[in-house]
Image (tube, rainbow, N blue to C red; front, side, top):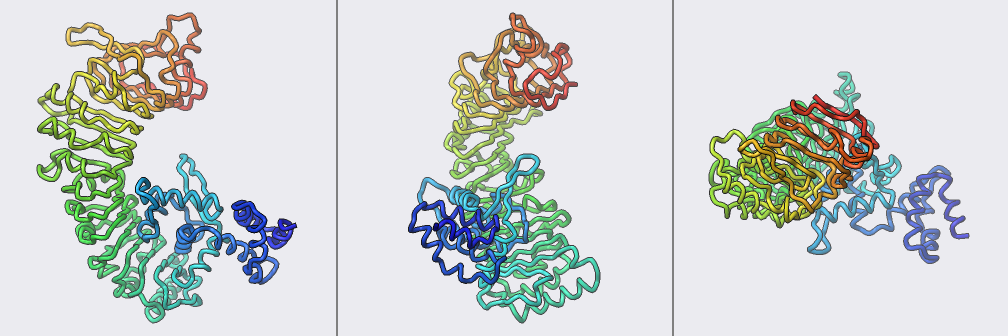
Length: 578
């Protein structure tokens, strides 16, 4: 009976049924269901089509920390597609995430909150074509967020700028500029005048958050500059589609000493001065410029930002990371995409990495030939970085002199944590594979292995490898008895002494391998898929080696002349052989 009475209040709306249904399942007790049925929120229904009380009811029950995280979704445009990390970083900037114990990082807490919001129906998780997840808020739930946050949060567009109620308690502001707002002179002028009038309605000196959306919001840069002249207490700034110098639009930008979060998305604009200004904003925790195509300028002094947790830069601008002097001062930094050993002498020692105890994600260490002493390799403390997922260790391939013994010992000491999933070793001048990758393999979680321009006498457990030694003789160079059971991607590039990768009988080393790339191996004449000598049909042999292979690339291996017909896996996708 209780259930039927609650259902009758939902007016047949699926969204209301889903949100209230999630509310009812936890806890699944008579007392809880009775409280829901007798809630005073139902009395606020204005008509038969009003489901806002049902949605508001679902908001009232989650814990306060989840309410806060949902609350600020009101600042974004309807149907905005959130990246998961984007939301977590925003919550960090807003200072609404509190770690409950020392074993969980603030990012872990944020991801947990994100998943809880999905489970309770406040966010919907979707997937893009390439498999990356994104999150959206249903339009009616977005209306709910706007309603419950109306006292402190204000989202302005051309459709509501005249009528919207603005309280003295507004702390968080977003302004949306649609393409239609600038498509003709009259629309542009009307919206501009209304934005100018905000000066008399809004206490900008109280603002903690400023978000500007729309590719053409830069058309109002002068208007915004005048409007936000006194906005000196900002802690969170998000500029979507910036086409101006930030310091021109926010004339007091360099004085925003409370700023904790800055995100800029822009395709058109270049600013060489912003980085030096940022290095003086000591409370910054998140700098997200990974979608700013014109970001440039010196990042030498970014290490002054000792509270910085996230410094996100474009994939083609990794020098913004590698140029930071004394990066070890930023002990909370969660990812450093690029580090150049000994780049300018002092401030670029591997010991700088050793101080970054929170380091995770992806790390590329270049110019390792500049290591002065073996002990320096140990100062990087890679074995303690359990959050690191991807690691590239690179020696300069163009160097004239190689100290094989020194480089071999250095690579041995640069052992990563066993959690590592993606490893690339490039240009190493040592003679042997490190023990942690070979006979005493510790990186058993590897999903991707890339070996480029190495001349080892022995290789990781990749099957039966035959190498050419300095006398032109064949010798077997693979360590037996171990395997990479999780390996999904394997790349062998510029392995000049690799003659054969034999595979006469079925092998279970690569039961999960999806991508195989072999490039620039001038002596290679045989692969496991080239031919067979066992009694099984060729098709069965090859499928036993690579049962899940989806992508195959064999490039510039001129002595390799024998391959079976493609496809020869259970789920082929692409092959590039030339």
